[in-house]
Length: 576
Ligand code: ADP
Ligand code: MG
Image (cartoon, rainbow, N blue to C red):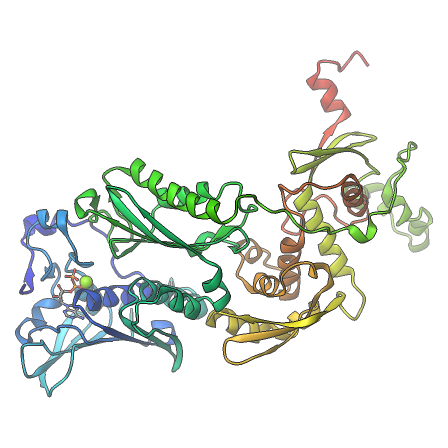
């Protein structure tokens, strides 16, 4: 179909909004155009996180020389002519806005040759104004070069994130398209370094091993589901393969990368009881529905869609995932015997209820250094009294009695605190490290590899002894002792993975952040049954902490129901 400007009656019905918010939006729109042009190969080059250059080259059908100028106009498209066309749309594009929006905020060069013509065209636009058009000798497909993005919109430029973040967004976006469109060859080169290469052989697992790692590719479970309304294919985590956030829950619907809270919650519900919270699966879900059953015209960047029947899609996704994971792992496994070495420690309740911190803060200390701290005693408030264990509640909390009432302790948060202080307290040599009997090789995605290289020193200070092993792998020789019962590779990844919660710890050193990630991973989870000895130990160790009342992220480890408060609630106050 020729490229034509949509009549006002149609363009006014296109969901309004900004198409190009950041470099990754440009990459996405250009990739989609190449896919719509039936390209078999798409090569992407990005310099300085897309701020100086984004180039996308394809071997698709190309644009007729006469139409190059029209392609860059707003609402000019070859993909629809009427709004009804959207009911049975097969292409990714339909808005006719991308090239216009991109060309308006950059120096834009289009080189293209239509497959049925024997000469190409080069067309240059600067800040939305045509700067030059010329014949180009024989070329192939289309190459679009976007330079100096947002040079004329400083406000937009100011809102870009750090380069490393913009680069991560681009790599994520490209890797997702490369994965879904497994028969197209993709390459992504950033600042001259190859980030992604796929071979167009249609092998999803091969691509997963490229963009995640080999281990993930081996472990992900196949999803295959079909009913009369839709087909669902893809890959999803077994219960042991998890992430710290939901970023790796990805949906393609009819070839479109979309984010949809309904779909996400269907996935998370399906995992209920299979994963420790707050961990998330890797789920790559490819849905095929009839185009009539969804509306694609609801969001300016086409990142959201609306299903005609949300409930039906929710149920289908939920049961597709649930079937896959229950077939694989009938019973959730709760493993480690974390305190086994201390199992024989026994405890006799101290009926005189002295404060645990008194052992650490002899009374004469204040008179020695002349401090008056004994009165305002922040330590006293921070510390907890000796507690008498009552028992475990709902595999989640410990109940204990103190001289001043009832304590409910969050077992995960409390253990995180205990481990965190143990690791931070370690002597000059740093936290204890445990050599592995056999070195463990772990494959890292390019972004993690980059982080690994920049943080290797700190990692070794906290107990990970390791070395690089080729361009995308690390050999681990020793791990921090507190996590020796965990998989060394998973633990290293956990230490590197960006964790939104840790990002909030602004005034923490990187070392402390890494320690807190390790502790989070190593701590017992909610849902884990603890033996009475383990419960006792956790309470004893918590009493010994400097800041027992909060986890390293500042969340409470315990709730205190005071004697007064209980009395009030039971209507007894005053009768005492
Ligand atoms: P849309 O994709 O919504 O139609 P765009 O602004 O992205 O709008 O592109 C305008 C038109 O330019 C497309 O409809 C298509 O005809 C043409 N076009 C853009 N990129 C390419 C490409 N890589 N190969 C062939 N044609 C392209
Ligand atoms: Mg487009």
